[in-house]
Amino acid sequence: MPSKDEEDDVEVRCPKCGATIRVALAEAERTNKATCPNGHEVPLAKALG
Ligand SMILES: [Zn+2]
Image (tube, rainbow, N blue to C red; front, side):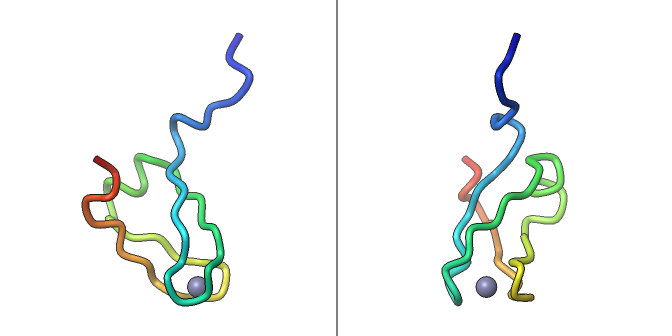
């Protein structure tokens, strides 16, 4: 039994405020960006590998 499903999430740090942002991998691949809790838009680019 898997304890967590972290494999399906991407974790990035907002370069503007340093907040940690977690976004579902599928969502990240589709939009190539994440929105931090403070409203900053963070491009994910190729960070996903
Ligand atoms: Zn931010």
